[in-house]
Length: 138
Image (cartoon, rainbow, N blue to C red; front, side, top):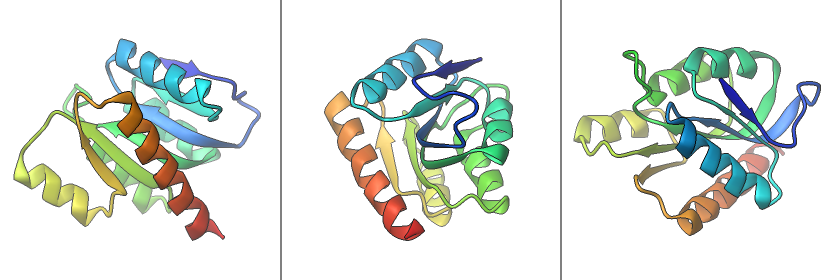
């Protein structure tokens, strides 16, 4: 399933790609970011997000860690990195394991936020990640 805010499939670049298996949380994040003027596309399924990323550019990925079905957001980031995707990634998770944090660091994530994330913190982090991604792309 995917959530789309004002980006059409013909638009090859967007600001933020969201990935969270919780449809309600995904919708809330997408609406918050779209209301702030960001071009956002969201997915509840990691395979759909990966397929989309093969043909579209995005500056920032905001991914949940636990995605169900034995997959996690860090696995998706790792695959995207291997595919040459240089976007800035933000992991959002309730996971507190040190091993998860260390793996996130090894993948050079932009940030790692603990759930529940306050909307102001999410917006601030996304704005900083976008600035970082734009500087790297320049």
